Length: 388
Image 1 (cartoon, one colour):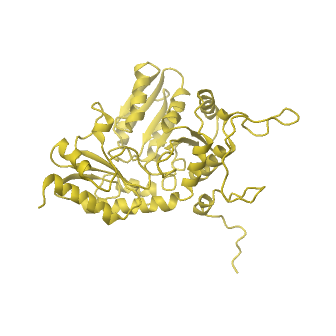
Image 2 (image 1 turned 180 degrees about the vertical axis):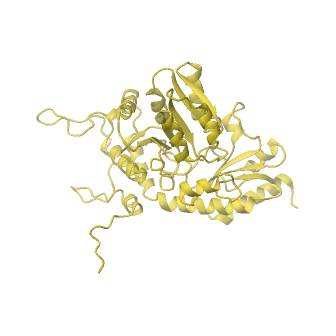
């Protein structure tokens, strides 16, 4: 018989069982929701837990944070009421005038946020082409840059940045590296293990996986003063994740590995089918061997590549919009990482000022049957361009 006493449980098992949760009093295997906004102190007037008011967190939120910390190989994780509030906390903890380096193309909400902070002279920003390490190194200022922001794969072009190499550049200049790997969640990409100082995810997306909450999470390999500062920003702004949403997040994470595996396999099938298609100019998906970021993505994701892709439709911008109009299975909606497949015209959603190809359609691939999804896009293209 094999001695199993020193065997470490798989992270897949740990997450599926919500860290082997058992409620001490009842034996329940499903975590409960702790909705209280305040907590009574003990007989010595001491707080019973690290939280004593809703803005500090709750038992449910702390449990969700513990699961994410295990996924990330992190010392600590903090959950926020949205991805944007998590990003705000990072920027707010920086001193006025801090130099920040960020990609020219990234999730439009965060890009607009960074640009707004810059226009208010709160921070100084230098930009680089996503995935271009030479361009990144050229704008980092030795001894001045405090934060390097990397989104990989970046939204919506899915350019891939080498996290380990970016970390070397940032650290050599005395800066911290933040990575946004929302498109490849920590069951695929462990950014902290690759050298990132702060890992950010919009937990609304793959971590939750059911399109029924908004949440953001920050994780760190090592807690320090900057982490305490970020915690205080969350506390003062009151942007901690609500217990009900934390409970839904825990529920979603228990199937994370299954959902992501199916989304990835579906996305690969769709990407291969439409690469070289007569009505598709380009398929943007790091899983394709022809993609410039393929080898780095393969290393950073363990070869799964993710469920996000973009199709650049031939013809006019209206042709691209019509492809969405004629889809019968894909939902014409914004977001990503849910069990259902979504499609959107990115220029319409991001606005005229965002640098995106007018024919680009962003697809979030869900867990449906891959052939059904392929057929839906094919029938739509046929209606737009005619059957050939």
